[in-house]
Amino acid sequence: MKALLLLLTLFSPMVAAWCPLLPNHPVRVTINHAEQKRQADAYIRTLAVDALRLQLVAADTGYDLSGLDLSAAGIQGAIQARPLAEDANLDGAADHFWLVTSTGEVWRVPWQQSQFGQPLLMADLSDAGLHFHTAVTLIRARLPSQLAPMSWRNLEQHQLLLLGTEPDSGQDVLFSLRFLVAGRQPYVMKSSQLVDRTTLSDAELRQQYSAADWRVLLSAAGWRLRLSGRVSSLPKVIAGVIYAPAITVKDANSCQFEKTEQQLYAVQLYTASQIYPKRSWAIPYLEQAALRIREQPDKRLILVLADERQSVALVDTLLKITTDCHQCTAPLTLDKFPLWQRLATYRDERGAF
Amino acid sequence: MRERGMVLLSALLFLVVMLLVVASNLVLSQLSLKSAQTAQQQLQLEFRTLEQHLKQLNGLAPDEVPESTLALPSCPGIYAAWSDATLQCDLMLIETSEQTRQPPAFTRYNSLLLRKQLKLSEPVP
Image (cartoon, one colour):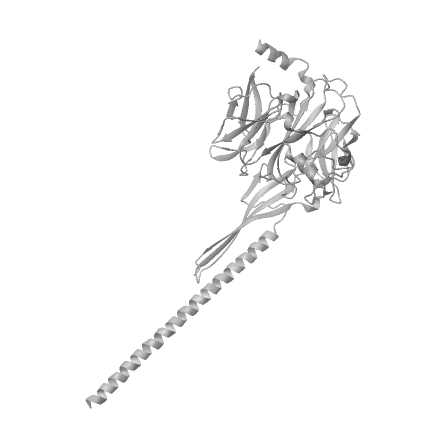
């Protein structure tokens, strides 16, 4: 009976209405395998109706490198979101994979000694009652000590961005979850621990909120933002600002949009506060288009929405967040890149007297 | 006659002792000079190597990819963070070494650099 229900869920027309942005999209990663670094593709493989497998295949030969049966490992339910890779020790190879189930469970699967380890449940957002279909990105972020709450021991954190859809309205909700980079997460995160940032206070709209208010927002486990429609192309994070285009949906069961206009959301990565004069504004809708950054002759960077045939400029002067204060921004230009940072210098001498 | 012989012998012995003392002093001063020069040469070698190393670091081209370059899948945490592979981070080990044969000495400087550069997916329109 359970299998039949799952089968019906998988093949009913309702599933198409979830509109995942990157359905079953393999993720190219560098991993340590058999004591050498190699390129691999990670994806969720469907073996049977209720049997999913996290699969790693060699990028060059296509041979299976390893796999993890998810139900045997304790991960139940469907998965539409692509897996995300994490390099915790910054050695140039992925050592953890993040999986998001359709009900909103977030799992972290270790990859060590050429095999998958026991998954760890990091968050359970099933109390939100949404369908999670897209894992946008996993970002390693670091707050300067003057901007972080006093209670934070570790200033470096992972920010996981997810998209969930409300079943009735078809509207998307953007989630940002904060996890420790080092050390074990002391609790399983719930949706109720996130700050709802759908509406901003008057003080915030006038960009007059204080540093104390900012720290209060950061003290939560993350935030969620209910968008005015369905996200039409994969959101991008550019210099600390999230850009997400969302189109209003008439029919929650359809992925076809007959509109010519949509809303572009531009929110701050850490608190979803506003960066530009407005937090969202109208932009044209292009089918199967993607957000891209383009360089201008004067080294300015602009944001465009582009498909194969055309592109539309969305933001003429991109802004980046700066560490000067909690709401400080500056124009983003290409002339500052590449950025160099000397991490260490070693001296080695022989023959000294 | 015997007394004169004793005086002569004593004078000779005194001269030999003085000769040994002077000779040993000369050798010691030569050695100390040599060791002082060696240390100075070592310092000069180290200074020269450091100068070359800093010149090498400052003269790195933006697109240069030294042999010992490690492309990181994700950048170390920064405040104004980026998603995906738009911001590419590379770890690079830059090495400069110098050696002399006389006196035998060897100095090497290694620097670990992090390069962050934007990978724009499309060419300039």
